[in-house]
Image (cartoon, rainbow, N blue to C red; front, side):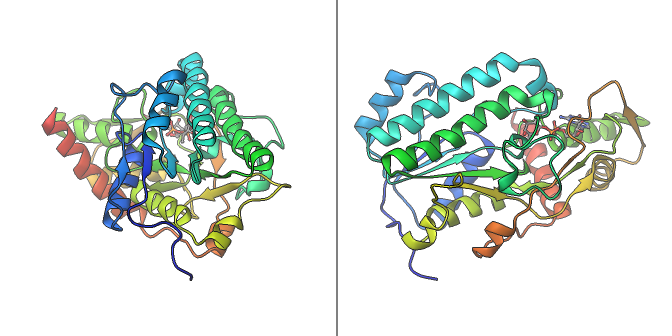
Length: 326
Ligand code: GFB
């Protein structure tokens, strides 16, 4: 492998550094010796405000951008806050991608989600399945915003010669997750419920839906490692992903999936909850299966390292630390 293309003193903007993935990207960059990392909290810079974003880019002139800022949530939040999900994501990504272009950013990485693919996509899901069928209804507003971001990266690459990549992680979890009881994703929600059930000695542990959907889970530190790996590829290796004929889209996943029922059982083991698992079928299942085909990324030399059980143990420690500090 040739030398990474980014100097360790390059100015790197991580949008969304207070989020789970953005925070992990900052830690990964620091651990690899990158010191010139630019961040702004939401209070310091509202990414939905175009004038503020333009002024920030004009002043800071970053060379590299990780666009990890987004309005995200689990199946319930996506379904209920549909207007917020489409508006905020379209605004954030349009402002940051366009300001990156105007200010000559060298490389930009746009983070999306596996929910951009059709609900009934063949499994495992290849990048080429984008826009080949209807989307899952519960998260269509979020998915359409993210698809627009991919199209924007591709269009700017084609018209202006920019070098923007769009990476689509599978369902993520890990330190810094959102543990809200309703609006979170399944792993933080079940960690919290199992922990509280254990403390209260509750006989039953409720899991939404039928337990039969299958999901693939990637530890957020692995995701951050993949993002930095791609961002720092030597020029010819990076440009491998830039084509006129297909979007600059790369799946990032663990390569295997589990049922929600099996996940719930593993979480109970990790947390030490011994009651009975019951399913609340009044809650939606969402997509029945979402397993990414990660052959493209693997062919470029990257694979996930963290086993689900190990990652869940770290996530549970993070949940307990976060609960204590609240
Ligand atoms: O994590 P989750 O909300 O993501 O739900 P999605 C995954 C599965 O877990 C669904 C079930 O089948 C849920 O019904 N589940 C069981 C639960 N118990 C719970 C619970 O207590 N909370 C939650 N949240 N789920 C999201 C998309 O969909 O995935 C987003 O809405 C994004 O757009 C994200 O793509 C990665 O995979 O269903």
